[in-house]
Amino acid sequence: MDLPRTPLSPHAEPQTAGGAGTRDRIRDAALALFLRDGFRATSVRQIATAAATTHTTLYKYFKSKEAIALSLLEEIAPTIRAFHARVPGIIKDRAGFDQWFDDYSAFWLQHYPIYHAFWEAALANRHLSDWVMERSRIVLSDTWAQSDRALILTDGQREKLLLWAMSLDNLLSLVRMTDAEGQNEIIRVNLREMLSASFDRIFQTAA
Image (cartoon, rainbow, N blue to C red):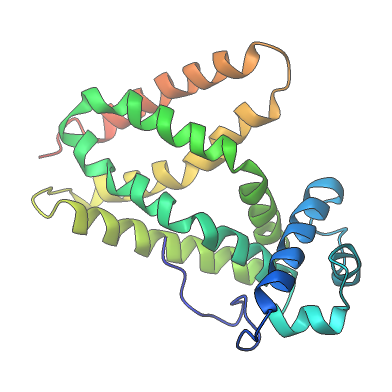
């Protein structure tokens, strides 16, 4: 997912020599605090203290807490886009769906802390939430078009696919939230079957 510069963009000013270490400490500290205390309960001053810096220095790298969360997502955005670039292929060859879902869900669960922090930030900031939803629609549509220009979808199919793709992360959170031993895999498999069935219904007439 390509994330353009916006009023919420991560960098407040150009990086300076030696700044990468400070920036990484800020991001790591923020992620740990977001997970422990929640996005809303975490202050910029707390992040700065945990990162062994000052809040004034923090603002040289990030304009806000939301910008830090966006920065975290940017790190994994290229891989997310690569996963969605595979979608046109599994529309034409449904045999690849299970592997695609297993690969994506494994990636999602591995990077759950970043997803969790970012979406909590989006829920706390309507502007960021609206921007993410609109940008996601654009990026997903462009990714599918570039991946397979021979694939023809109706407007209805394209809209349903967008909703399906944007719901995927929320559904995977159900897997992550289930801590009972042995239940995660059961829920993940059931979710895969449900998503596979809905995928079939969307594209039963796809070219």
